[in-house]
Length: 630
Image: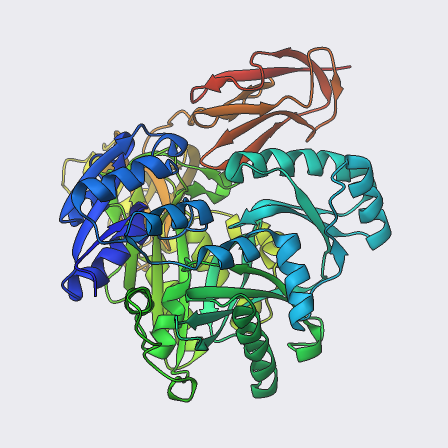
């Protein structure tokens, strides 16, 4: 076994790999960009090396700099984590050529499965069922649209070199295809350096089922059962669970056997995931599940598999890389209980899920559950990297118990002023459809209004009003008819006064009567920026006795489209003088590895587009202006 490991990654996965390495007595080495100089993963490592500026292409994606750091520190092995260079075959070969142990898939397997069209062809040859679609060399927009028309809508455009939900677009009608193709190609080129795509039939009521596989250098491959990752938004997984609800023994046997067959077809070594798309209209059936792709790396959602099997997959990766056999035979692996994982993102569900950046002035995560994170209170959420800031993982005897425990954990999240999706996660986990296991990849889109609506409960309002009342009278909770912050209603001698309190919640005025019959539940209140923040079920609410101006960014009432965060202009679908309708894209901003379209707020004419493609812009910059009228 090697004695030192460099993790060529950042954030929570670097911290997660370090945890296992330290338990095994292996020295840990971190790499970091200038933006991550004070990051948690840097402090948790035994040694850390600066490898470049904030931009990932100049640091974490620079293979030469990472390899130089490994040589300079005497690292005997490199673990790539996920994302960045984890599925870069050339990097893996360079690591091995330098005499350093590569803790990842064989380069040949990475290449075989890295291009989705070639991988599907290989799976057909191996006898693994695949979804119908087009994987041809002709990448002209005309040919791609013709193929999509022939397949029949809806279709899914997917980057050939894609992964992690990047470079994917669902298209429901032919007239929307070319715009979606352009957006998909830009995102694919930015994320993977390859803008080629394939077209697949979009499965109605689709469920995303994946199987964890593990192989060793002696030809053995085992599976560690399946995960259900159907709860997604824009092809990004939100909540994952293991095992999959509704999976019977016969279907499990068929899908896991197909996964093992797929892994053996590429002589796979290490941890990998075979992803399948299932038509859930009639439940899970073996003849309605098709191969989608293989991820030749450790997955973000690997903790739920670890929870139900009792296996440490990172330790298994270390042992396989050191030439050891798979630690357990297939008949020694079994499912125990139910596990769920929620991805905590720095984003604002109430504002179109726009990523949120800034300092984590207040950052509290729940006790009693597994937390994988790479940030802490006082740290920064940067514009340069993925907005996921933590994973919350629970394990229980039953699915119902796991869902309830995870909902409780998400409800206890307190983050400020960075916005998170914690409240949204609670809503998902408590939704009757999710509780019943009636979930497909369209669930969030269909239920988004109910899942993102923010409103304080009466109990929370009462608690906030009492705290404000207490603070505004200088700590004296006694009643006075002359107190300006509380007004008696129907004042009579020898009668209990009725108190009315004005409360502004996120800038909206509410007047309520303080009801002594309601339990004095004050919730969690933290002073910040001159207001009090009340956390309820994962949602933060700014409460005060006075009106507060709303935050900048987004769309102003005068038609100006402002950058919600720093980023780069990647497209200008509308030009000055163009007539646009409400909701039509005017300018597209790329930030935090995602594209964000700023749309016309009403019917009108584009009066100005202030920036060109390629321009870098700051937060709140006016990118374009739409003038009312035509």
